[in-house]
Structure formats: structure tokens, C-alpha cells
Length: 614
Image (cartoon, rainbow, N blue to C red; front, top):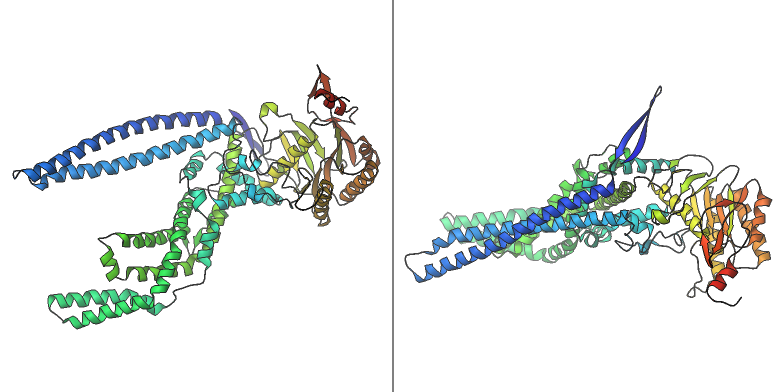
């Protein structure tokens, strides 16, 4: 078990509360075994029900054959086998649904074990659509794509949840919001049953719950507004039925029934196009909204206490009723519309102006609640994003929440590692930036770990400011904007060189600092696309400008001439390096950050190791 502590502070006392955190791997394995046992029971029941259905079918067919060939047996003898067969059909359908849910539950926990065992890459949505080449740090830090941070974190079942999670990764939150998200993540962290219930809502939720379509439908201009028409649609069928009844029993002649029927037909003819338009436009959003209702019902039934989640639940009330109450009424309209396809009910639907009346009801619902749909979808998206971070926290119990502080730019991380690397391959390093030290110049040979260390800092900063735990023993930071030159490259289509792309990214970072926002910059191989003379002058100007605006950061280089910057900017800057060594003709790296300047390069050794004659 992993121990963690919470602090209960009052005006006169400080109490440390120790709690045991469950081992996620053991819990997942236990639940998989339980579900597999349930699945075996269900499969045996399925086999028995299939055999029973076959036997009852033979019984039913035999009874009908005997009844048709013998006067001693009537067709009523087939009632018992018929009822038995229908009962078995219902039981079998229920068993199949339970089997599918159990199989999905097993996959849910198997995916969890894959994440814990570092076999998660390639599973789930990659979030490629959220990567933005014009963003200050979106590219180069493995935030999106196969094996990315987004793929590791994402547990959302809807497009809205994925969009909110991606937004949190791309837009650092203020200190107060970070703390609120941390508290919400901590509250939902151990609610494993809740996450399983959401996952079991259906495999097609992500594909079918389309935010744009339901929002556009809810906010579209009204088609049916006439109160007189709606009243007539309700009263005319009643008048027709009463008049027809009076004619049948002899109280009145056929004239009143004919007048009522003609009036009803004229009303249906007048509104036919608008009714058809309302019903056809309602069909696709209705399926989406039913899925939304299932997700909202899960959120409404979840007991929450943190302010962030309490406010989120309050967003789900409209005119004093929960969102699911309004959506269930819409579900009733959908069921009534579908009932028109039943051959037995179709004549009654026509007589009662079923479609016209329901079209008016749907338009009335849309007028009252349509603009609330986007708010409900957004609430689900936020809830799913928090749930994704909570699942990550549960599956990585050793990762702590960072301490977020106000004030100048600060980053103090102890034993920081990369969350996308398996623990056995993850070398951890510590860093402390603030006053007075605000810049590290990191030198080192190729493949020694300079760029990976920048990604360690960047990814953990992204996690911290999204409200998630971080891969470190501890992390203390102030909220900061992030700028990075990781992952930049030439663009043939745009006609831009890598050097120009790097300058554009540096300008974005500089603009962030000009806004008065504390900035953390990560410059990989700073200005390496130009000559040594221009590189030295340009690099000094860039970092001086950023430091003068209160920024902190790290710059890597393999040009040892740039290490002189640390002496010029002391005590604001210092040199650090990564080492390598040659063992038995192979380059060996320990990826450990050390103070000072690297004393040698491995470029020639690497060339010779692959057979180049240098």
C-alpha cells in the first residue's frame, strides 16, 4: 500500500492524517477476476437459455401441428409454450446485455493494467486535432499523438470531455483554479465504480454525442410558434372522437364528425411542412441527447463536496429542475414519435394528430431549454476532464500534487521524471529556479539527454497547471505561461526554415513575457541554425530580454561558446551539463544533470561507431 498524508490545520493545532491508498494494480486484477467469474456464469446461463429456447420452439411447433391435424387439441394449447418462448426471449436478451457489459468492464480494467504496466501507447484517442503549430508549446513535448500525454490521460467518452482536457493542457490555469481542480481530482480519485459506470454507458458514446449538432439544434430559430395552432392540435382530435362516438351511438348525425375530421385534416395540411421539418431535424439530436441524459444522470447522482464539483452540479439545474428531468421529457417525445411506426398504433396516431401535436411539444421544449444544452454539454466535458485526471492520479499513487504559490516565477522540483517513460527507464533530476538563479545553460553531447530534460520540465509544468499530479518527489511552482522551441522543423509548404520557425516561437514566448505574465521558457539548441558569432550575440539578447521581464527558463546547447552567457549573467544564470563515456566501443549515457560545463563531445565517436572514416 502507498501511504499519503493530508494536513488538517486549525488556529491552534496541526494534525497529520495518514491514510492508506489502494494499490491500483491489485484492485484492477481482483476486479478482472471477479468479472471473469461473472462472465463464465453468464455464458453457462446463455447456453442453457439457447437450449431451452430450442426445446420450447419444438414444443410450440409440435403443439401447433397437432392442433392443426387433430380436433382433440385446439390452438389454445399453444398459449403456454408461446408465453414460455417469449419469456425465454426476454431472459436471453437480458443475459446477452449483461454479458456485453461484463466484457466491457473487463476491457476497462485491462486498459487500466496496460497503463500501469506502461503498455498503453496506441490505446484510445490521440488528440491530434488539438495540436497547433502556432501555439507556444503545443508541438515537441508529446502532448498529442500516439504515445502522448493526452492519450495517457484521456478517459473522456465524449468529444466535449476530450476538448476540455486538451484545453487544460494548452492553457495554464491561475493558482486558485489549479487548487480547486486538485481538490476535485482528489475527491473523485478513489471513485473507481463511478469511472466504470461511465465507461459502460456504451462504446459508441464518443462517436454519437456530437456537441456541435445538439447545440446547433437547440439554438436554431423556432419553426412552430403558434399557440393557437398547438391548442387546435390538442382539441380537434378530441372533438373528432366525441363527434364520431355521438354518431355511432345515435346521439348525433354524421355532420359534426365530418366537420371535425375535415378541420383536423386542414390543420394537418397547413402545418405539414413545418411539422415534417421539426421531426426530421429532431431525429439525430434526439439520439445524442439521450446519451447526454445518461451521462448527466451519472453526474447528478454522484455525491460531491468540493466547491468546484458543487458548482458544476449547479450548472445542471434549469428552472428549478435537474437537466435529466427536462431530457427525460424529450425522451418521451422521441418514444411517442417512434411508436407511429407500429402498425397497430399508426391509425390512432393519424386520428390523434400525433405528429403535429408532438412537433409543437418539441418546439416548446426547445424554446425553453435549447440554450441550456451547450451548458449541459460543457458541464459533462469538465466532469470528464476531472475524471481523467482523477484516474491518472489513482493509477499513479506515488505522484504528488504540486504546491502552487503566488509571486514571482518559481520552479522548485525534486527528483523530476518524465511521465511517459517507464519507471525503470526514467532517470530523475532536480532543479530549482527563482531568485536569484533564473536561467540554466545546459551543455552536453548529442543523445546525452538535454532535450528529454526539457520535456520533463515542460510536461510536468503542463500537468501541474492542468490540476494533475506530477512525476516528481515534490514540486513547488508559481503559475506561469510556457514557451518552448522543442519540436520545431522546416516547413516546405510554408517556405520557412527551421531557424525561422525557431525565431517565430521565441517571438511568441517573448510576447507572453511582454504581457506581464510570468514565463517559463525551454529553448532547445538555442539559435543553432546560424553561425557562432550571430548565435552568441542573438542568444545573449534573447535571454537578457526575457530575464529582464521576470521570466525563468532553461536553454540547451552543444556550442560551448554559449556557456559564457552564464558568467555574463551571474548570479542569474549557471552552467549545467549531461555527460557521456565510451565503454567497449559504445557510447554510454547516465542522463544525470551535473553542475558545470561539459568537457568533451561525442560527435566524432558517434561518427566512427557507425563506420564513418573520420
